[in-house]
Image 1: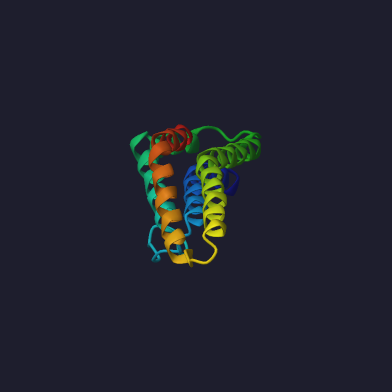
Image 2: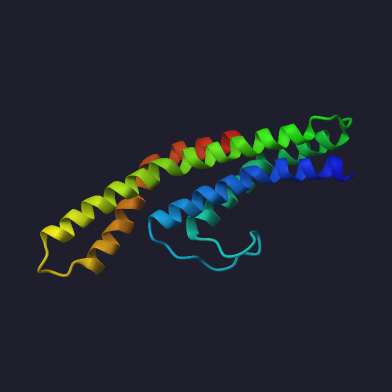
Length: 157
């Protein structure tokens, strides 16, 4: 049972883990702290991690994920389950990086630009204002590439 069940469980969990990881990276880039503990996910997740995790769960359920898992459970046991899990894990990491990379790159550029503004306005203390500005600009970046991120996440689910 473990030979059949563990690869199935990992294969079903990897897309959700991918979405949670990408959302956590976006939360870290925009400076958001961890949100409340949700009964759906283990531990405390940030707002975007929770949103994307729930989106991945919804995609899994609406695209026939439970039926695919049931069909895989009924198929005969072969020797390639471990290889399939490793391939799925690698694909999940690639998708998490592809989803979070535009926001992380944009957040780095915003950080550099705001540091230059803070340096140019040396006598003035712009720290609190620039902190709020960074979060708002990163949210705008997320809005610009959100459809691409969702499409990437749902291709894996």
